[in-house]
Image (cartoon, rainbow, N blue to C red; front, side):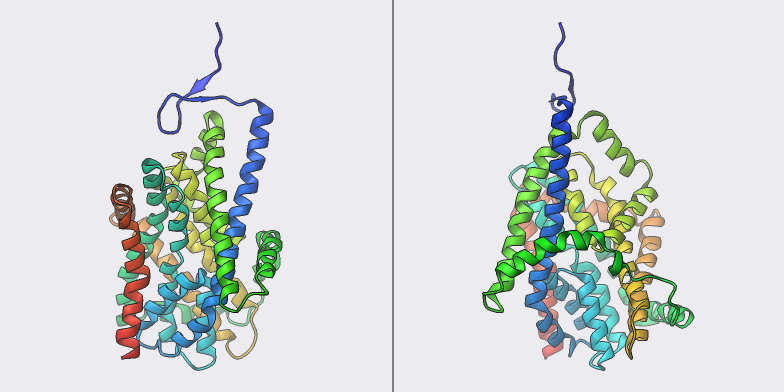
Length: 393
């Protein structure tokens, strides 16, 4: 007597009935649509935070010459704006206007690398109703945090003493400034073009509100879209990612860590956002399709991928601050290359971000307030305290 074929479930429980072909096709169309919605939501939140944070960030940069203040401004500014590229661009503008030196801009760029990781924790929060899923999702999202914190711990003091990022970026700028053989990827950003109508529709809907309420409304809409997209994306993936489909994904990401890293870099170059790359992976980790260890090299690659946009765009820049803009872009690129070599290529430090992420996730899954304390302290309270005590005093 024949029965419907079953396979082990994602969590190892008995399992899932294989779906008919039409249901699988329809389900994957739904996955594509929800991933599109998630990408739109991240862009909408970035647009809202930019509306709130740009003017304040320019004010903060005016007294960010102190390296610790600059670092804190980079972290807190990126948390507010939700775009490390935007934070870096504002810093470069401040340098070009003479309000900030390049030495002052480098800590801001390093801080922006850390601040950009907060959004993935928001995505992980959508799994908070299930302890195991929340632990897996948070482990995958915060491995990016701890990788960037470790890179900062290594290179920030080194830069303060010996200035390797400034020296190497200056050498690259001297060699390449004035060449025009690299295209500006903004002209080919398919993802940006596809999500722009949804983003502009939300912004237009809030245009009649005040300068403060408008961006806040935009942020709330983006957050709600993330909650909807991730909730139903997780449900669909549980149904679809069984058997061969699940094996293909795991094989693509898990077979070779350097291919996974290259995949993360490539997707981020296309989407021009490391946040989008890592946010899309979190539901896969939450539902058990990917492990935090498999996500780890992808987020490392996405860190590097996000630097190419600024570098390519800097080649197309003109004007008096074009050269310093190119050097600032190279600082970001060189920093992330050095970080990969020091943390991921060298086996000694490689396990540390994953170890910290998994232990934080385990603690937060048992006591939900742990995540709030972690995010509120390291991304908001400490940077704000440094700015107030060191920058204002």
